[in-house]
Length: 243
Image (cartoon, rainbow, N blue to C red):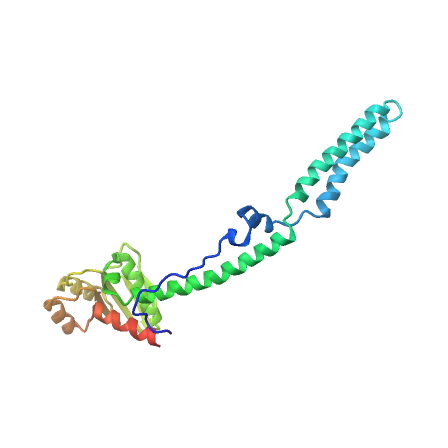
């Protein structure tokens, strides 16, 4: 993976606009419509021609003027109905311009996705980004970070699972994790709570961005609970970006 950028990346320039290619949103829509071909044309001939033929056969001898008017009316209707379909077909020049626009937009979108990845990499190394996250968002982001490190993770329901926010596994180890996106230090109560719900075959982690109080650290050592704070997360991110 590429190194983490040290400066905030800038979004790509030169976003393709329809006007750059001499087309409009209507051209873009019509280019995606199947051209008006012979099928609808033949159907129109049958729909209009069949009853006209019957009428002419019946009234042509007795009412020649009426028959002529019917024919003229049918032809007029036929032209109006079919001209609308043919006139909506985009020209070859328009179709080529639409294709050029789509290709340019595809390339731009690829560049923009790369920019978003660089921006995310940049933000993940900044303390203010992590501390700006809501509790739930922090759980999701930390879970994604663990996934990138090779863990299988599951974020529990928002209502909580006895203090467990994430369940993770790697190399046969089961890990329960509680996350606190607090600026202040996490106290011993939180650490003790997680210890109370873990099974005998589970490892317990508490992740507190702002660090931990001395009693929390002492209790964690006693119960073999692993504590992680922002500086640990930042180190993980840096290592991942250099792999």
